[in-house]
Length: 101
Image (cartoon, rainbow, N blue to C red; front, side, top):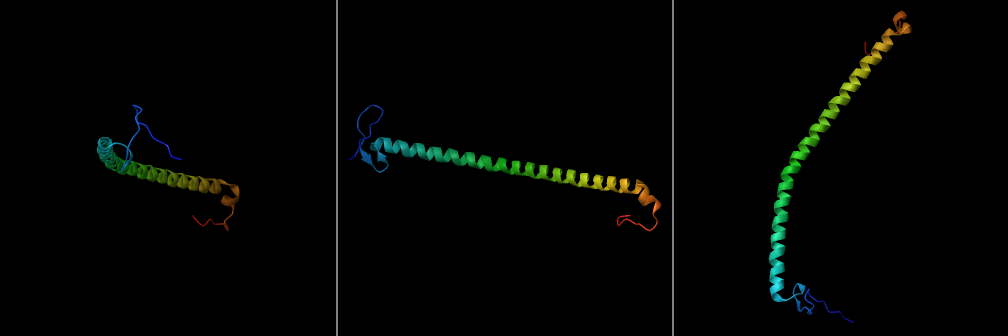
């Protein structure tokens, strides 16, 4: 059981190397494929250049985020020190010393 493929005009297609196309259509398809591959390669090259920019931007954002977290940690630590030093227990106790004072 086989089936016959038809082109847009309705005539049956001949089997060639690339499948069911005439030799002229086969050359046309090969040329179009080469052009498409070439354009995709240029797109990939352009994207690779822009991805390096995107990666740099991403790394910059990560560094900014790390700086922000570090700043938050430092401020929370100083706030913690202030809260402990202002508490009456620590101020009145001469024996009790904090490890970071």
